[in-house]
Amino acid sequence: MRRRNLAALAAALALPALPARAQIALRDAAGRNVILPRPPERILLAFNFEEFIAVAGPGGWDRVVGFNRRQWAINRPAIWREYLKVLPGLDRLPDIGATENQTLTAERCLALRPDLLVVHAVGVAAVPQEIARIEAAGVPVLVVDYNQQTPELHAASTRALGAALGQQARAEALAAMYIDRVADIRARAARAGTAPSAYVEIGSGGPGAFGNTYNGAMWGGMLDVLGARNIAAGRIPQGWAPMAPEAVLAAAPEHVFLLGSSWENRPGSVRAGYGVTLDEARASLRPYAARPGWAALPAIRNGSLHTIETGLSRCLMDWIGLAYMGRVLYPQAFADLDPEDALARYHEAFLPVPYGGCWMARAA
Image (cartoon, rainbow, N blue to C red; front, top):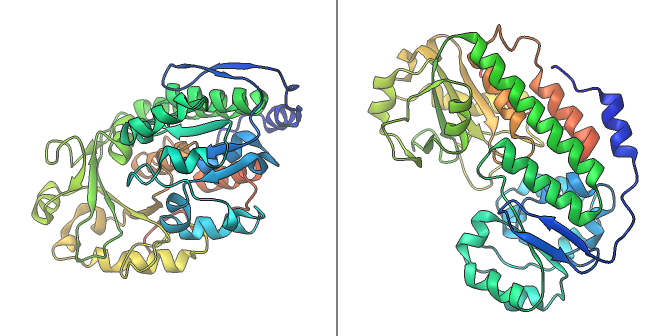
């Protein structure tokens, strides 16, 4: 991995937060000018918990008085359990509801007397009236947008959080690293001069059910960055949807990525993430390789069936998922990149939980 000078990064992170100011003016990822009358001490988080923690640094979570519990405790249970170990009181923190199912309401939020709501752009679009009511009550709303997966919006979101939290140096280190890593990955892929075909599928439903694949968004967008030929392009609408099994066979992808996680009550799902061993991850891939007709796919014949933890997209760590895919697609151009080492170093530098488990792997 081409490493940014870790000594310089460590020095930047060691800088103290800027002194508290009476008023904070910032520009968020939606291009809105946001005024905080004072440094926030009662923060609500609708999503992007790990991004908030990475920017806020040690003790930053102490300012959080409510959050979207569904997106962590229910949707990402293994990650939730890891953070329970290091964030005292997390399990008792009030739930503000979720934007994705419209349970986040102004009443729930305002009852906690917040002085800042951090919400993702998708959340604003899901409950615009509730967000407007919260702002009308005098609570500043800071919009972040990691969902578009562009370096510009990742950086804008990160810098806005840093300005709000008085952690500009930490935020700038994260934003600069992200921009640098994605630029390097793009350049490597462009120099490789080939366009291998690839298929990505979320492996949550077991081998008998074809999960969503992606066209131009999320993992499909990542394949576009890498210049790969995404077999979903032209076969599903923009966004995500399942591909017909026979269409996957006809497209004959050279590489297959099955997204794994720590889903509960999902028998047959692909396993990846905290608490998952390499052997467990590989064992969960085998039934997919045995799908009808898959033995004839170039990806299976050539041993290019992989899992990646589904959380390595639409976040500050998604460049690491991008680097792993790049290493698979263009092994020579990415030979000196070690995505697993990069993920371990990211944890060490920015997150309070230790790196562990299996987040990316080739099937045995």
